[in-house]
Length: 580
Image 1 (cartoon, rainbow, N blue to C red):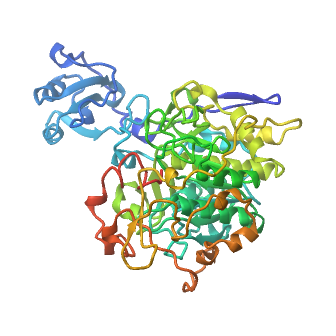
Image 2: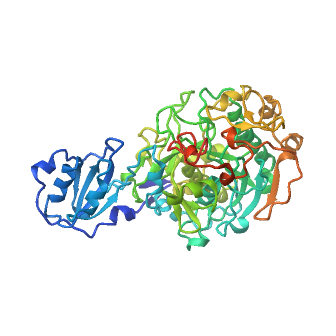
Image 3: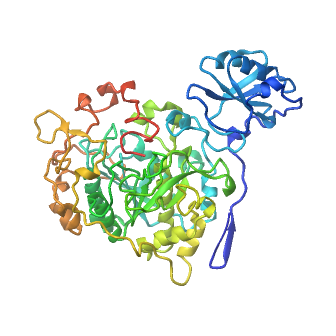
């Protein structure tokens, strides 16, 4: 990539492809052409074919022969393309035929293909999270977005990023830079029993201490405040998200919060003009806090989630960088949501890497337990989604603000959009293209006027109904304290308090937070310190279903394969419910 800012230019280097693409590079085909029968159906296509087929690399003992190809066809499979560099070919194998192919004396080995063996792009369907879990980790993403070219003095030091998510597991990768754990849930410990929040925080600000800096985040010197808004099953309500944003704005000056990451979204439809969740996001924006949000993982047109449809904040989609730092092979990830929004806006605003990214692990958490294939060693975890892409951009923003503390949120957005690599700018869901950290920091610190976004953006009045922004993933709660959980619907918040528009239309401040019923119900814990016994106000537990209400974790709930479906653990959601 070559980009120019104020007369400067940087070139994104061509680096190695992913380990999966090169694992068989030493096996070179020496032989003859494929027989006419085996060639039937062969093409350069990378389609997935019938859902019952496996996409497999077959490495032959004798690449000069076409006997292995004929074996595949005799079993009802299809030969898709020859792969001379890998010493074999790509095949589609019907269910039940992988073992006989693998055990054949004609075959050296077989390998399931989660990536295209030539391009390196993920071949995982958007609805198969286990496929993404099995991808080799993307270790080149920092070079792909120019982080390695940002001056070392601009690594996010002095800037605090608030992460509204499922809590955090303290780690040596965060150390004392984890300055606070805030908890608006019934758990009141600030810890991550679900596993999503820890992963995001690692991508934002982990310094890689446990991996010799191999798996560091985007802003390894930034401070972090974890604002926990969901418990062990990931269940949360829009009203809890609003309260978390209220806390962030009220404590902006206390902790130096300049950025907030929100890797969350509901599938609610409708414009943003009176949306209370959009109004909450805009409260933070007006308070000088840059709000970075995920676009959603539905992988379809008009599927941007709320509040990612807000016109002011920065909405991030996911790119698959194919394991290289060069832009020519980048694509928009298959799962990444795209616009237009109900308001006709062309979201997401920009892209960041979002496939096979390694962040911190929350051992024993729900996701960690049920997705063991995604573990990377003892301390890390691999994930794919627009959540991860959003976390990366939040870290880039922290670097920009550290380099120029005078930046306004509108300027941050304007600079980001003016400095992207535009290879994917014309693609569906590509926004302005891939974030370029080096160019963004360079422009943010340059002399002269800076570009500013949102000149034509229209703010939400916040007067719309709360229920309209919840979408199709409601939660259960015992808001009246009778021991019986009921569906949380209508104009009532997660505490059981009647909802009024004043919750988002009154300008937020430390005084409005102190007067909020959420203030007495929110735990604030220093850094990695043990959580004291809770003596504050009651917060009802939120769950996706009533049958395990009251359970303190997945084990006690009997959480099993029943909940591994599309709503809870499907490919449309990196974790469950609304976490992306």
